[in-house]
Every structure is written in C-alpha cells, then in structure tokens.
Image 1 (cartoon, rainbow, N blue to C red):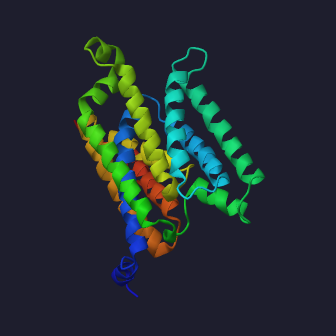
Image 2 (image 1 turned 90 degrees about the horizontal axis):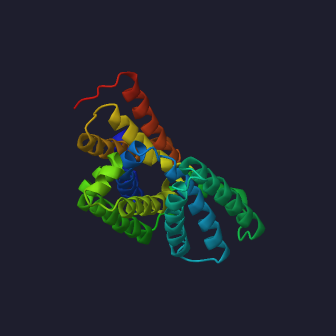
Length: 279
C-alpha cells in the first residue's frame, strides 16, 4: 500500500484525528511559553512540573477517578505557584527548588503507584505515564475537547498579555518601574506552563513534555534574534514538528510522543549547524 493510501486509511479513523489535533494544539501552546522560559533561564520548570503532574496522576489513580485532571491540574498549578515563590528565596535558588520538586514528586508518585497499585501491569502504567501513550487508541473525544479548550485559553492569554510578558521576560525591574506587576505576570506564566504540562501528559508523557517547551524555542533563536520573530518561528516549528512526528509515527508504528520529540531534536540539530540569526 502506498504512503498516501496508508495515511488516508489511518485518518479515516476518529482516534487518529483526535491524536493529530491534540498533538498540534499542545505543541503550539508549549512553543509560545517556551521562548519566555528559555530567555528567563527557567527552562527546567517544565521538567519539574511534569514530575509533579506524575505524582498527582498517581494520587488520582489511587482514588480511581474517572477524570484524573480533577486532581492533576489543580496540584500542578499549586506546585507552579510554590515553585515560583520558592525559587526567589535566597536559601533555595530556582534550579535547586526545581530539582527538589522534580525528584521528590517522581519518587513519591512511583511509590504510591507501587504501594496502592490498582493494575496488574504497574510497569506498563508507569512507562505510559512517563513516556506517553504508545497507542493512538487512548485519546477520547472528551480529552480532545479538554485539550483544545485549554489550548485556546493559553494562546488567548498569551496574545492578550503579550506586551506584559515581553516586558517581564527581558527586564523585571524595568517592567516594575513602568507600573507592571512583575510578580503577577510571572505567576500567570507559571500557571500557563502548568496547564500545558497537564495537557501533554497523555501525548508525550511527563518525562518528555518539557522537550516540546524548549526545543522549538531554541531552534527559533538560531534563526531569528528578534523576540516577536522568535515567538512566531517557534510556533511554526512546533506545529511542523508535531505534524511530521504524527505522520512518521503512523507510518513507522512508533510511539507518538517520542517521535514528535525526536523530530524536534533533529530540527534543533540542523539549526545549530549554521545559525542564521536574522533580525
């Protein structure tokens, strides 16, 4: 069967279209905030929050909740707020605070999954949560709508608060001097990242979601040096990588999340060979 015929066959199934939509909206949302996080040297906040989300997912599984997001989303947002506050404490710097949350949440989550296991295949459940679902069959229509709605909220807030986020990203002191509440917008950024982390759990897993935040931004920064151009380029790269990753996953029968991240890495490697750095 030819490649076009194979793709046409797969896309005739709703669950494939669901996965495709979710991959695009999550990648797009993550890429927008990724530029700000990279420039603020806070890239690993996504990694820390993803591990917190894993711990929250373990707690949700113990209570056998039909909708895990009832626990996962609020706990991840709370962790983002605490992490932001703790990172500004002179006794616990930002990178150390992230490490504490990351390792602690991962360990507690794995412990909970093993002690209160509700499945005969604990290793499989943990692997699926950490690295994303290996099957396209796992996404439901409700999960798709949930992801799309959250993505619209994240993208809408980013566009609406673009000027404020721009100011806070480059110079918080100057932003504060001009009347901008830097702490408030840093808090908003942290919450939006937490939302993105939860959105991407089913697709790429808690260990890989931070790659969708970082790689498109880093690739775009090797092509442009203007913030506005970098943001747009990052979004374009993220969407293209998501589409290519999905298509390759279908044709090669590989895990969706890992394939998308691999494509992101390849693009980053290509842009790093000979950076253009346009204005």
